[in-house]
Image 1 (tube, chains in turn orange, cyan):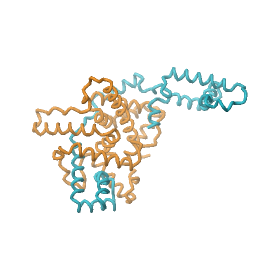
Image 2 (tube, each protein chain N blue to C red; image 1 turned 120 degrees about the vertical axis):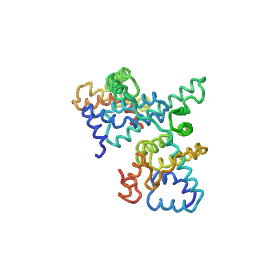
Image 3 (cartoon, rainbow over the protein chains, first blue to last red; image 1 turned 135 degrees about the horizontal axis):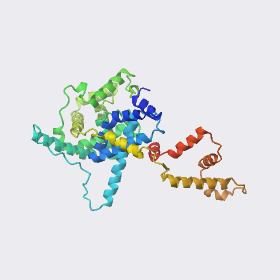
Image 4 (cartoon, rainbow over the protein chains, first blue to last red; image 1 turned 180 degrees about the vertical axis):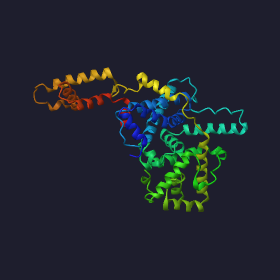
Length: 231
Length: 160
């Protein structure tokens, strides 16, 4: 098995507690970031990220190396966050006096007055607020697909595993999600960051590099457009 | 290739999930259809806008807090069976054992009309009985224990 996380999880299952700590070290930022993007505030993100790792810990006996560990961890985290979001919705429904917008729209971060370009920074922060609102307005599945694809760089195959859907179902989720985002952000499209210089080589974010590597691996594999060869 | 088909493929095209001839077909269409090309650009821009919403990594002390919660026992399986807290689950199991004992007593031929009130799930009943009668070896007993240790999380994972 080529998945180093699976080997760590198996070591943990044999009683090696330090293997669990290594797993936490490898994934804590990813899990926290994902929870933050779902929940929009640091304290809830911290709580849900911790909860996700506690679920990993509790799965010591039951976990089996069937899917890639990280894919499973994303699923655990996404489920924990979506449960929390549903619970919030119920609470909001009960508290009829609460303002309807509470929690729905993430507040735009205040501009940093020390930034070299405060006006540009303010615009950027405002746009980031619109983006968070647009993503939060997606339905649960579309939102999960967007967060894991856009920010964590999962392939459609990995998304399908994480969401326990078929690859065509994931593909169709992203068609609709992208269309919804394009509509919700139509007024702000001119604020989009510039396209990477060398579009063919894709951007230089870690996610883009992973995506480019996957595509290269696919091309080197079967070459028939199959997504299976990369895994 | 028709515009509608291209529109359905744009997301996968932008995500690098189409290769070979299908990708070339989309590329060719985009080169000759301004509307679809504009749509592709708008989708790409909206997607790049998402880069503006950054998110921080885990805060200082994350691991220490997690370690403390595990030390507090939060890492133990939840001690719930089928959504019941352990004492209630134990009571339910005791009822099943009792029902099993009753069910094993000699009785008249089953009445086909009473099938709606069938005794509790035979598997669980038999397991509990076997355990009670001490006919399980260590490994089987461990398997039973694992079953009892299944937490809500495990069940949730099983169910997706």
